[in-house]
Length: 157
Image 1 (cartoon, rainbow, N blue to C red):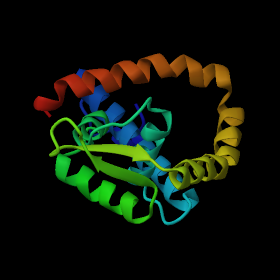
Image 2: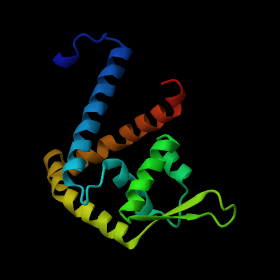
Image 3: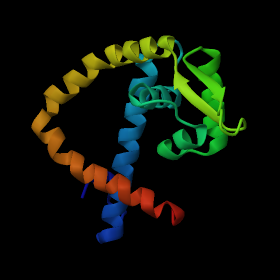
């Protein structure tokens, strides 16, 4: 076991704690990278939203975005307000009920998304070259399974 986590039990709970610590460390480091590279003062949560919208086929609702990103509706409202002020998204009333909203990415939002991807590309390419694409692809199924399981267990966490 890693010296850093020596105080953890040597059983399954210790292994799970070590895993969660590694995931947290990866999340913090990837967030720092995003924050240092994103254009227009874009925040990581804002990038997450335009990243989803850039690949979406049509409009999404704020609640759909909040569900996909596993964040509270109030946090999503705040993120969308910031993106709308930057003119990276547009929010329009749902024509069927007039109360809910449709969120779509604007052309400026698409351009900003492409700028963000271009700014991240050199770091991501170097990272993949250092650990190898084969190794990266080999761990992805396990990471995806862990993410899904943690999402299912969210009510217990």
